Length: 106
Image (cartoon, rainbow, N blue to C red):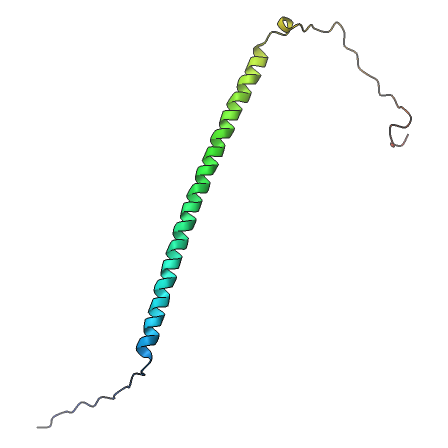
């Protein structure tokens, strides 16, 4: 009976393979951490900006409420109570050309 012999080819690993892989792994871990920190920073920044926009909208809403309240108060005021009277007649000014006030062609 014949026995089979397995022949293996020995591949020699260079001496610097492990240190190069270790440095590459360290660089990838450092890059991962930097990217995670950057993601967290921009997420927090976006949240802060969104909160600022909401605060600004609330301020605008408050100013609008004050404005509409003032307009409602003016609209509800009786003009005769503050001394205003209706005009007895209405006159319109006719367009008059005064020399020296315009460069428009005649």
